[in-house]
Length: 596
Image (cartoon, rainbow, N blue to C red; front, side, top):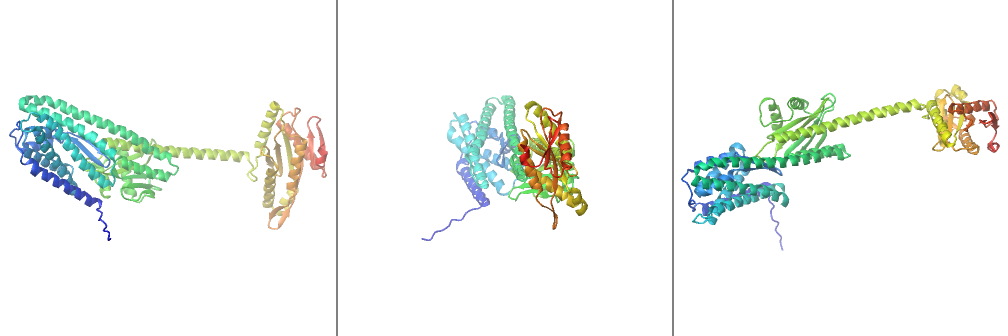
């Protein structure tokens, strides 16, 4: 069997097909359902132009609600529609609403093409459906006309919302139930309330026209209340988005990845086509970068800034004026309008990244999705808050970096002050301090340390024969070998020249000291390669001082080891010499067994 593959419609054609369906349904409903109808028993002889003007006035009392990428307006048009069901002829009412809708879409919202046709078709469908349903429910007597109007208007609103939702789902490429339900819960109750007011006003116009003036106040209060509700809801959503978006700058370990996610979220938060972040270098030009997130384009992160002059003027503009939008198109914002129009977008807003001491750059958002609204004052306030958070983050990051640099520098200077630059071993200052700490601790714990004082034999000859560089190699080698002989708690230090001191942590006895000395001498007996084929060995005179109750202080312990070292140096056959603190006697040791 030969299989045929069905052609798949792209998104634009799918929208065209949907629009054609709505046009066909609205036209058929008008011809079949509306044209044959006569007016309600309470209908007045008013020209259809009056109803056009009434619809236009009602559409100025709007509540804007942003949903996904589209802006939706709930107006008082349902109030006029409900009242017109009772007071106007069906054909005049539908024609008037479609004409008023066309004027608003073309003049105010500047819609063109398929979108204009789709919205006009939905408007015609709403009006025709409401009129038809009202006539079917009210009957000929008009007894239940008020209930019929209350049912007809919200029903037509719900059907219109279904087609709008379908168009959004097609353009987005996905359908989600939760946002649809949320949209209905906003529009249908508002439509029902407007219809109720419209019915009350229509009945009042028939029985007591003067009472219409009294209904003006509650009508305006209802609009104001709903605006306040949507405003509070938007503010709560903005706070949530602010927390989520700004936290992206802190939660990712990769700063470039965090910056990309941040701009994507900013663009999503404002339902905009583009979000752009410019970070200035130290001199406002050198090192400046631009990061950008744009619908349908690959993200740009920390790219070198090419339009220095254009962005510099934007920075100065935002710094002087605060957060601002291009929608006015006059005065200094003309530069912003030209900048954004050059990128194919209709509107934009920009805010400077400012802290107390400098301007770090700017945050720009452009191309608001939807034709019904542009960026509002609340959007500007939210953008300014975003910009301040980014600037504070940058300032904090720079401060933390400065603090790290200062800390690192202080630590480096401290290390240099306490360590020998040639060998990296602790110097005289540090080793004497550690000996003092060990002695002070031993007076409380009775765990005494020991000190070894070493003086290299033959170092001067190496220096004089092969030069200072060879002498430095010898000293570094001896230092490395001393480290390898010690335990983790012990310390080897260079006192200066060819003299070294080793602090052996307690508790330690003579046998342990002998073991350390043997390891040191074994390492010193190994040949040292100075340069090329120059090899030498070096010996050492070693003096030992054991800590104990008779030790006056740390300096005395080091002096005892130093004194023992000099005594050992004058006795060539002595391997090392131990100073006896208790008896103030120096005992020469010629080998490990003599320690006993």
